[in-house]
Image (cartoon, rainbow, N blue to C red; front, side, top):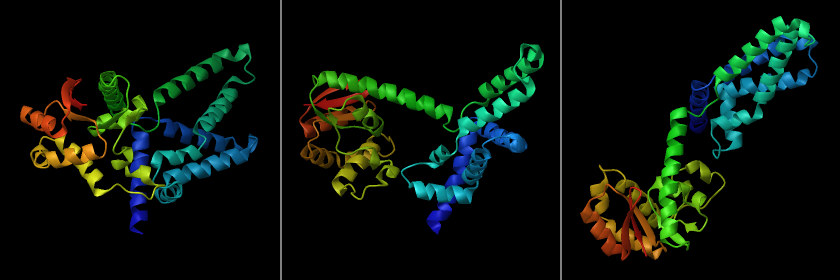
Length: 278
């Protein structure tokens, strides 16, 4: 029951996030209302009825929570909207509205139809998208570009050979995407629990300790605590086959020396990171 209540809360927050940065949801509701108005004269009413029912289900927190439970935690709230033919509903509503204004689309009626067409075009452009905050999207693009830059240099440094990389999360998240030859001691499902929706295996304590240690090294407030177990974590990583380690450029020179000695690897600075490689 507690899990279902949490899903209801997530559904409500998801709906708010879904409509914060775009008004396509409002355009969808307006289109559905206009289709209801045209219902008696419109063919294929089952399409409108289905779209209306599913849309209400996605907006209502209780039914949305049920949809989210059915699709499993592998997907976020926004994915339940794949059941709603948003583009088709909006396109149909606009088409019927424009046909009503323009009649048979004859040239003699352009004075009435053309302004309606321009109005619909402006509404569509100004409505924006649905979900996905623009600042977050821009940050993700910048983060990916930065990761790709250091990974390209790393691949060149290893002369195209296989590399087992242990690095901060923002680099490891795009490592396999950048080059399939890069191996990792753990993947994205370490920090994104939703990716484990269909998996029963869990990471061992040693691997979990590696992730937590690397996260602490990226946090100045927790870095001092992480330094106490530097040699132990590096030894465990090397035993797991790690032959390339990245640390943020902000770490102290003493830490670099300790890491170089513990890992028995060469060190080099690339794109804002200290890279230890064999």
